[in-house]
Image 1 (cartoon, helix red, strand yellow):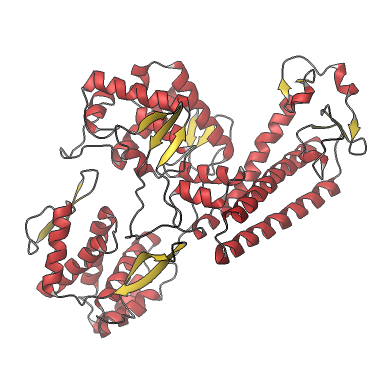
Image 2 (spheres, one colour):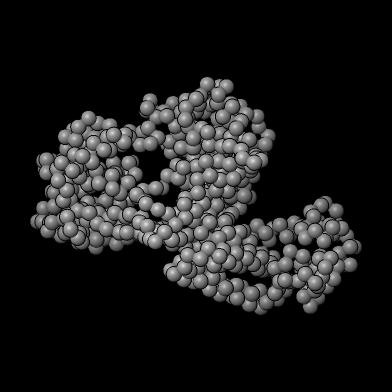
Length: 545
């Protein structure tokens, strides 16, 4: 076809000297032969993506890897030419772009709807269409995004005119950052999950096992919900005394010849998670006699959760089914058994309120925690299944909010611990929280920081490595520090974080040195935790004023 300036975006991952991969962007337009499109149809049919009989069928049946079927009818009012164009578009989305099957079926229907509104790109209707789409709400503007890609694909003068019209509608392609629940809600949710696991028997847990296992895995490993749904039955194993879980990554849309960093699929997990999954497998064998290839098969869920999926061909847990189980858990366990109230984001008012945790939130929280713990950004990229480091930069929008919320939790811990510290083993480096009051041993500790606190280290001052005492785990503040001191620390901390983010961006642009990434990752983790401490002490000071 030669060079194509307009068309549908395709991405290939190509080898680059054995050191890295290149993202090769190109466009493809509707210019293949009819025989080639029919060949693609047959290939997708052999792969099981298409299950209807013939290319010329009015209705195509698409089948997802979870067994769900999606139906698309190519029966436009304008005849065979437009039906063929839509079929061509769908085939290349599914084959070359590896687009999601459900999204493809939905977008074809959206395109057909908008084409009808334009009388199939009638140039005389452009002024009326421009006025009409200017009144579309945000959800309806998604239709325009799908139509725009289709217009670029088919080309032609009328298509370009309409593409210019819809491109002028603001915020069609904008993506808002995900709003996450507050840290207090995450802690409460985690408490409920763990307490429920510990205090209930396997029969009580059986109804909610997908939710319990999803949370325990995803809060540690940054997984997409779909990666949990399709866990194989034989997903866990033991090697050399350690426990592992095998996870297939689902966001693998484009054909790749080589990765600079192979996507991680085998993860070490704790014995508790391993045992819980093992118990579930044994229970499923006993109750349902389940021998399917999936951990969360519909056969088992029919017995344990009382589910009745509409599609008999579905073999495993789907998003719709998981949402049903999750809704039951929030209502029956979180609210009825534990007495908490699940509220929308931003509406937490009392101690018993838990902001609603969406399925996709936990993956983001796991990534943020890894960043705050100072992990190598390249390692986080591999764990998250990302294929470029730029993706991680978007998570810094949440890190600041998350760190601030975490500082409030730390402040409350400091308040509760203030009169309940035992320093008999103060050389251990950690607070020992007990019920007895602060003993006289406190006054035997050395004064530090110009008399503003005491140090619990037995080797003081020989192991001092912190530039500021408040960042040291051995430090115990004795009286409030000045507002000016906290303000100066906070300003310096913000400058350090900005400099580190810029350093990371520069590394991403011209370096593949793993050691450099590891070093800046650790610095970011340290600086974020310093931020949390500064905020916690500052909030505590403000409360006492």
